[in-house]
Image 1 (spheres, rainbow, N blue to C red):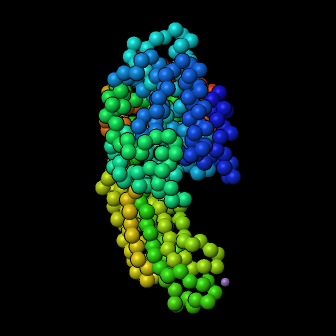
Image 2 (image 1 turned 180 degrees about the horizontal axis):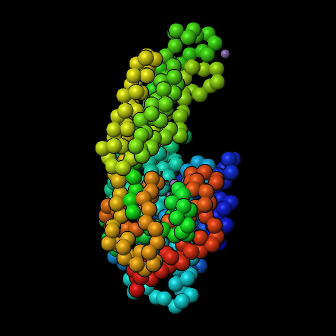
Image 3 (image 1 turned 90 degrees about the horizontal axis):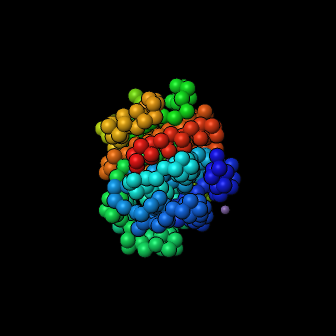
Length: 393
Ligand code: HGY
Ligand code: MN
Ligand code: MN
Ligand code: MN
């Protein structure tokens, strides 16, 4: 799909996936690409106070029909998660223009920044700043693995960190928001459909578990004399697997021992838990189970433990009236729940919001195997065009 090919080379990492994170040089390259594509279509481009980019078909105005997604990725991510929604939005504008459509309502495309939280650890950062779902002071102090704060990163991207935070003017501009996204799962494959609508998003959050023990020599320290935080962390990983029952999901995808030497007993280790379930009570129950096991493991190992909630969002149920209306427009497509979070999930608490999914034959996401066939991508863009025409007519 043109567009996806244009950016396919940007931010490819050694695993063959993509590592594109907010407010980095790679991010700047992707923004430049998007702004060029938007300007080529005569769209007016502006960045909001939180670093999200808006491209306007017609005069910017309140109550607009807005579509978009993100261009950043998880480390080693796939080619479609985020970019497909942005490229499909550009293609939908082309399709509508080709048929001579002129929106009667302002229409905007938005690229949200740092949706994956791959750099600063907080998911949907751009949309959560816009809605006030994350405290601006807390956000400014977020640091990346190199210790750079969000405030510094924003400043070096040419924005004023003091202006980060809830943006009521931007929210007023959103009359309705629709995000197209590659499906992260096999629902559409199993149903034999190229395009679907989202019904809900699981509650999910991220917690950092910091175990502190005693750094020492791997060879000179007898086993009985150790306080090894990695041992407590390992027990916690297994506890997460045990806790995730009944449809709940618990993942530890990132563990960082300090100092991280092969012949060094770590002095501390950070482990991040990603927990998701149908609803807050069950999600918090999973986290409580894992925390209890982590505390016991830390005590056994003579280590201390500090648990910090880094981001959390309750279950999202998308606007049913809007979904039914769009489904009538699309001619009765499958309606699916998802375990993956999205900027649309953040906005859904503030504005009528819907999501379109495009079939992913592998069902895999957040890995290079993530895929969508060109024909299904085209179907997705055409479906988005029909939806935008319906909403902005
Ligand atoms: O983590 C998620 O579900 C999303 O991809 N940010
Ligand atoms: Mn993702
Ligand atoms: Mn995504
Ligand atoms: Mn030595």
